[in-house]
Length: 120
Image (cartoon, rainbow, N blue to C red; front, top):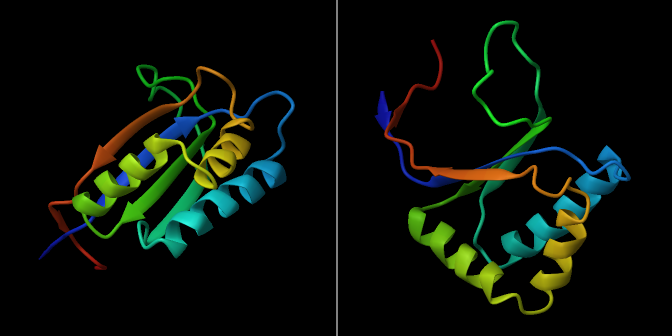
């Protein structure tokens, strides 16, 4: 197993009743693209939850999981500080994305990998 670096922001959420996946994906892509241009982020994936019978009852209610990769914890902190300042253009990009999310449905957590295996 190899030691790992980087950080991952995880978000669990549901889309708002008026939102559709293509609109969310477009808004997310614009937000993420801006952060990538600034060098904060290094990858992402979005997944739809597939419930497992008998498991997950203690998890918050969510339909989607987003994982945003950062090269380091320092990159994550700098990105967080940038978004928190709420200046343009990130303000409009962030709001366009979060407008697609059901209010009160989002939960976030950060992970920093320790070790990983890449196959076999």
